[in-house]
Amino acid sequence: MNAIWKPTLSQQKKYRRNRRLLLLVVIFAVVGFVGYYYFPTSPPPELAKTGAQVQDKQTYPEKPTEPLNQDTASMDNLQHPVPEHILKRTIQPGDNLSTIFDSVKINQTTMFQIVAADESLLALDILRPGNILTFTLDKKNRQLMKMELFIHPAHQIVYQRVDENSFEYKDIILSGTWEPQLLDGEIEGSFYQSALAVGLSEQETGNITYLFKNKLKFSRDLRAGDHFQVVRSLQLLDGKLTGQSHIEAVRFFTRKHHYTAFLFEDGNYYDERGESLARAFQRYPFKGHFRISSPFNLARLHPITKRIAPHKGVDFGMPVGTPVYATGDGIVTRVKNHRYAGKYIEIKHEGRYMTRYMHLSRITVKRGQKIKRGERIALSGNTGRSTGPHLHYEIHIKGRTVNPITAKIPMAVSIPKSKFKLFQQRVSELVSLMEQPVFDLIGT
Image 1 (cartoon, rainbow, N blue to C red):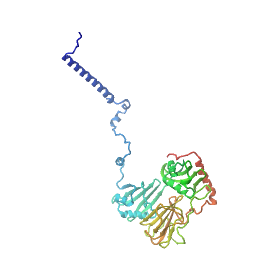
Image 2 (image 1 turned 45 degrees about the vertical axis):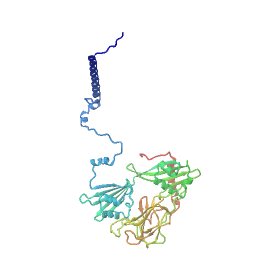
Image 3 (image 1 turned 30 degrees about the vertical axis):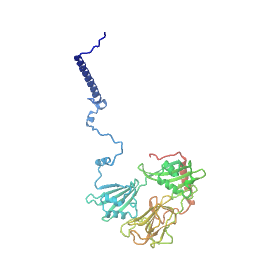
Image 4 (image 1 turned 90 degrees about the horizontal axis):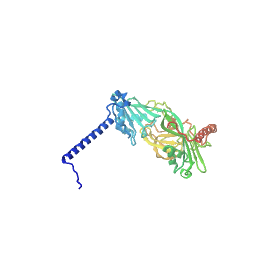
């Protein structure tokens, strides 16, 4: 007969005690191994040689992977604090000069002194997001001594106090270096989409569209697969791009035709035959004859302030209400009523030309409107700071003011015979760039 053996009660207690002891031994062994492995009592071999440095070294949190917010970025200011008498404001959408001055606690009287100094430049009339204003105050009485407008790395304007009631400005334009870049693409969808896809900006795309407006119907003449090329020059300052560019040449190849535009030394665009893509300018913005009451003079004595102030245009004395005409085809880029310049208009023309008409009594065009040479845009007047009825007229080429009476502006519709060989050489240079494999600007 089989019997089932069972341990006694005392034996069962002994077995349980032994199991507990064994479990404790295993736990202590594991803890000891882990502690030795992760927390060595001596430094690792690679740190043993620099043990003193390691003791002095502090532990810092890892760098954040997200962009630094304003509070975190301000840590730099703790290490390199900005002097209390220097204030900076970056222009945001919706900002205006008045609110910015209020934010830095500078009174409106001082602001109008700055605006008065800016009358011949009008740089403060349109502040763009990203521009930076820097205010330098007197350390003792907190009076504004200098204001700097940063437009881009190659263009800054400094307004400096000259006495208790006035400022003067210095327009700083750095030439930098210009390097060519070839952009090559095919039409996929619209030209606008295709141009952006190869790297052209919206403004450059709009300029090209406007340049060919009389030669090419983009929605009708361009089809999928058509080819286009653009050579543009990019500005660098100390090896870094400033964001400024201009178009040097453009070619379109469609199934039946090709269209070209080459920038020449006169600032105008011509096709390969030397025919202008733009209509010629007219010299004067009015009909008839009116005397020059104040000529172009960069060292003129201002008739009201009695201070040396640049006169960057020509004043024509004429009765209030005299019709004013656009001197070339273009797009109206500014329509403003300025405290000192009065009512004025600014027109961007093809190439690198801009014209400005000031002290008007009535404006008959709107911002963004396309206008033709000889089209009436306003009536002359006596608005703003003025000594009598007149029209102030300016021409800007490549961002610089020139004498409207003597400036070399395109008055003809084709390249003059005396310049044609030089033009052909320029076209040959640009075409040779376009025939090379696509190249990009070194370092970008």
